[in-house]
Image 1 (spheres, rainbow, N blue to C red):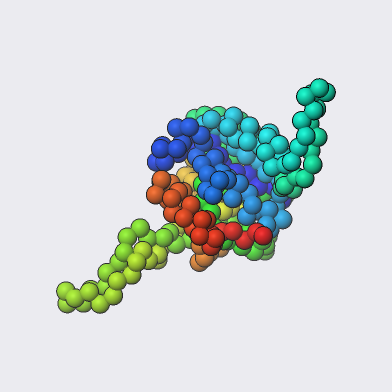
Image 2: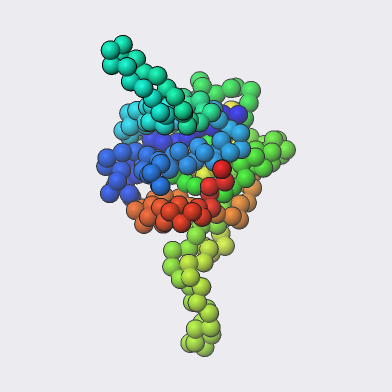
Length: 257
């Protein structure tokens, strides 16, 4: 099953770093967050990726074009102009990198990579800025079992501030950064049938508007709740939080060995 990664946005809310590179290439623990997302999918056996590029897409292309070079021991024979690779540490990935336009919206990006998808097989779709310990294998099985056109992971966003439980003016309990208001949001991990692309008009279509709204209205969108770890890297603060988790050695999304 193929995995489509949306990696073309500007990342304006984390402009401290995104003015130099695409948001999905901002590093957590010395690796782009895009790599972390791909490692999660690979952990569940999904190794065929289609990356939708846009803003500074050449940075992503150069990263993967040089991936083996940067993760291997090698001998450079200057006389022959040849490289000899020795011990390598690379992934079993096949990565298709597609320029989907600098100004294209999320739905338009998906439509632009339709030619690289199998018309008879469901595929995964996610954003290039969110990590989770979600069971992607179970998500795919859930999708195949219900027979609808689309599945979305549903998560409760983490709270940003400590909460107070107050009775008669007295603080009874303080809860440091509890989950959100118990509402569920789009967790960003989708499993889709190829025909959903027919709902996308053109480059200006936002996936989260007309296509998803239409799927929901027609009863073709199913949700699978995930109550584990989930985080989106929207701001520098989010980036630093994920960096600290990785540095601690207890990053919840690191399911791979």
